[in-house]
Amino acid sequence: MKTKLLTLITLLLCIVQVNAQQGKPSVKVFSNFNYDMNPEEGETEFKEFELKRAYLGYSYSMDENFSTKITFDVGSNDGGSAYTAFLKIAALNWKYSENLNLSFGMIGTKNFKFMEKAWGRRYIEKSALDKYKWANSADLGLSANYKLSDKMSLEGQILNGEGYKKTQESNGLFRGGAGITYKVNSNIALRLFHDVTPRAEYNDSTETQNITTGAITYKGNSFTIGAESSLMQNANNISDEEQELMSIYGSFKLSDNYTLFARYDDATETSKAGTYMIYGVERMMTKGVKIALNVQSWTDDVDDAEAQNTLFLNLEYKF
Image (tube, rainbow, N blue to C red; front, side):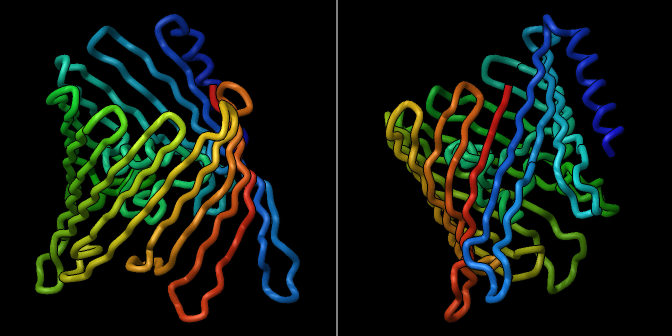
């Protein structure tokens, strides 16, 4: 595995050296230390250092209309390997006009980009739709962005539907979605997105899965807050099966370097059946480096359930 990673890094460095004047390399790493605050009786507190993610990327502009981006996602997987490199982004972008942009290939999806940006702390935890696996962050397909005005924009996508770590299933069904973003003013923005996954089999117990997400964000000089609510109808293509998911998050800037933040997820009406909470303080160490001391808590949606609390020290560095 080490040999494969070294080969990958060497290849990226070679590409960078050849095209240094026209392209831009990028590296982003998520790491943490975590400590179990309430172990089982008689057990020692679990604690560990983790390297959760390393993104190795390169972007290149052919001309003013065409550009490309490649990103490898290096992280753990279920196959037993400590770290595996997945091709997450391999996209060709075409600026068709001042208002219309198209992307083709292994592309970033549109389902929760708005909410992930509003949450702003992917290195600590994924946004709700991503965390609870209601949508993939990247997939093979085609997407389009159209700017209607300075206040309003439309997005659409057609995808394989399996995500960037899996190949297209034999049924060949696509997953589609469309969204609209409206900026009320310089502080408030609204978002509506609808996602459709067709059924693979046609019978009385299956239907097309639909996910509708609404979100609102407010961003001031020192205070930000966001909320999102999602409804999954015919969940997993099972007729009349519904799930609901809600997430609220906010932050308050104490100074140029320190920010308080918190988040609450209500996942009681999902397959996970519980609530999730994060609260902590973030420090900007220098450009491209930030750390966050925080507590993450999960509570199962059952009677007399106790919160499972874990203390985290998260680190992100990028260049």
